[in-house]
Image 1 (tube, rainbow, N blue to C red):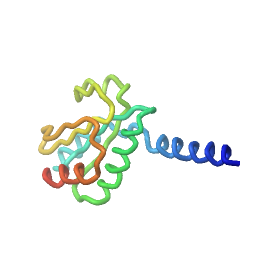
Image 2: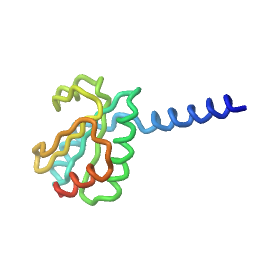
Image 3: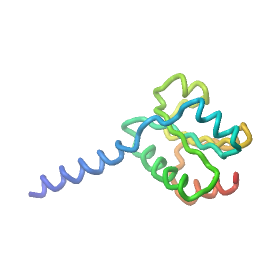
Length: 122
């Protein structure tokens, strides 16, 4: 019985982190958000990365908690997008304001730190 519970638990944990992993970045939407004066957040992920899932959960919540931000995410194996932003690692967090990159970090998953960075840019 314990094995069944453990297998079921692992299935839901790993399955739930993979659900939110999808590429939402589109160049035209990124450009429009910047033209509209929004703070634009871009993050990179890869399928097996649990820290990516943690970061994305924080950023998904942040887009609802802050006004005037737009959030996009992309699979770091997408070479075209990765090269556009010079991103080489998953869990890379980029923040743009006034058409300029104003923040870059790798591996940041702490909600308080991410929120503090966003607040400093707004």
